[in-house]
Length: 113
Image (cartoon, rainbow, N blue to C red; front, side):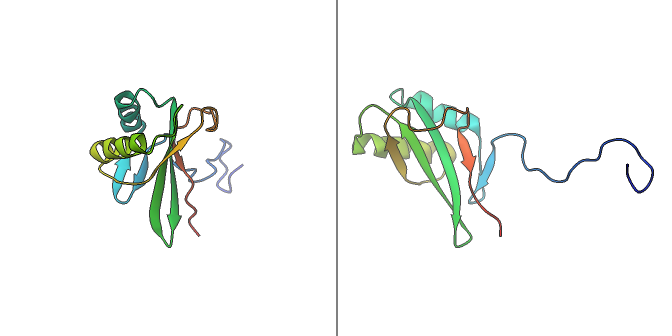
């Protein structure tokens, strides 16, 4: 019960975004943009953009599960990412099955302390 007498449940507070959209270096990155990257490169089985912060600057890495660890493929994926989300960043190629299968394509791992 609230101090004012209301009996309805109270909202706990600000819990964050309900979707996976994240703002990185002033640009919004949306799951639909990640889908466009995956469609452009059918060799990607699963991908996840992991966003962190270092010295109060946004950093991100695109992790992609692929069969072959070809550096040329990573460069192509990076160029597509730059074209679609207007941000350039590193691409890490991973073996199939290494990324969690929880449905997330954008993981915001930043801490705000």
